[in-house]
View 1 (cartoon, rainbow, N blue to C red):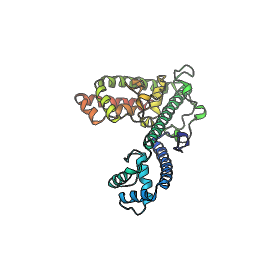
View 2: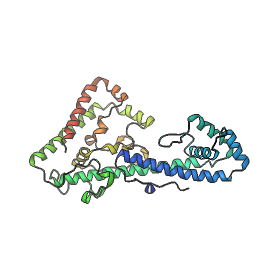
View 3: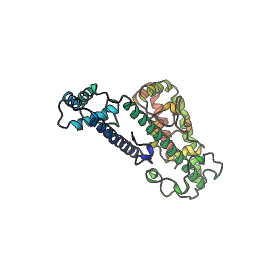
View 4: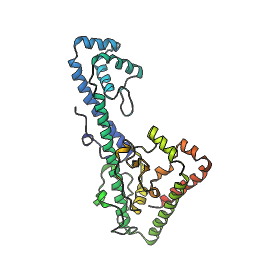
Length: 317
């Protein structure tokens, strides 16, 4: 089969959630076209009696071959419509069509093959997102060095994680880039502002670590059962102050782990692998209802610390 590879799908340089969703739609559409071709070839091999049997079991649809292509796609994605895999037929009709496939002996390996393709594609997406964040952290470090907030050499960030010479980012990747930063040297007051903001951010993170100390089991159960809030696309919500904070700490962006397949590329078996004192704001500020309930006795203090973190982060530039 010719299911599309990551490199063959348009828009694989995504750097925003909207662009990622566009890439995802393009990948699914290409896979569906391929499955419909495979399904058509299978239909042509059926006997007249088998085609008539399917049509009868399917309720004699006006467009029998069209119904066949839709249900073949449904079969290929595991027999159930789910985002981002849509079928375009009502659930009750989908059940009828799937039942009509019963005696036709479709290739049993097909759903597994599509599932493997999708998992492999998501892993490439995770790699792409991790690389993008790494490039942005390197870029932030270079800008901080140009402003002389960081020393030009030996600042700690790993330039091997990306090459941003002359910006280095194209298309979507320019989203979120502050314009006009250039290579202007920062004044002493600006350097002190950034350094003071960094100290306040780190202090707020440490206080939140203390406040969140009992959330580990709560978040762990949620992650195991639902995937949690550390979704694959969360890093596409990171912004320039987040990248600057990581660069100021000399953080090296980790590569995705197989153990947390399909989730945030920076999630590990024991939680987030980014430095806890320098995590992006979105990773600290979002509290689900379950987390808020677990923090009920000190939720006011937690919200105050998140506000302090937000205010300090805004002064990183």
